[in-house]
Image 1 (cartoon, rainbow, N blue to C red):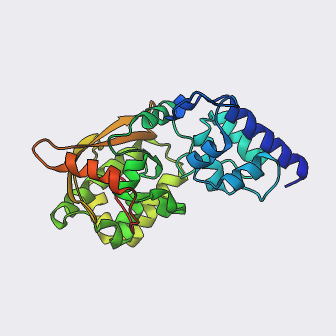
Image 2: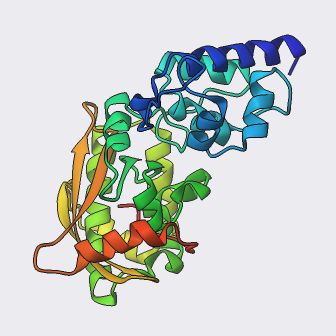
Image 3: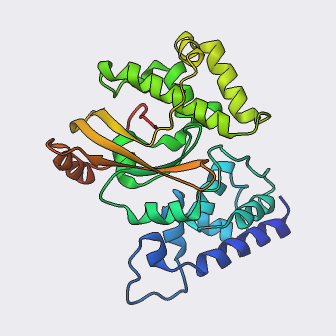
Length: 287
């Protein structure tokens, strides 16, 4: 990247940071703020970057940011789709396709997610790629943003990596598999026939997983809107949850949130999770 491009990138980041009110991203405004909008350290925390690294970006220095960092900055700064695309161009990165881990999160869903702090919640695509999680969802499921490429889709990992199933009770695995496949068929049906992202995912799963191949042949179709989910958490034990969904207008994204089932001790365990904090986990379910 040229020095001019770095300066343009830094100036754009600064301008977007200064327009956001702290309360819009779940931060207390505070009585002694010296700058309009967010501080640099606050953007860094929201994007999962070091303060030093983000400061260098705004100063027009440092290294070229990765696709993952640009996606995190776009979410932290509440960029519109056009602004997100401009950010990628300034960083000399290709505009990400719809559906991957760098997808533009629906603004209303991101706003809702920011306001949900007492229950695990996250936004995922219709192909089960998690785009963003709140802290309690990370504590419950692990950080699901570490997966990239086709493996970013949880349904891909479910049928190709046995580790992804470890925190489900064994008796729940078969129903979950059938539900995943029925939901995926609905998503593929909604997309254009020449949508390579969806068709390539299905083609690879047909080749790699006999279980997926058998379930796909049944041609079941059912969108996952609400269901029961049991999760074996390594610290607090069994979580018995209702999993609910709110869909974007084009059905490409869904906001998922998990509430404790009545008559269980899950509410107390979720409260404990807020104290225990994020656990280092091998994997986690992503609907």
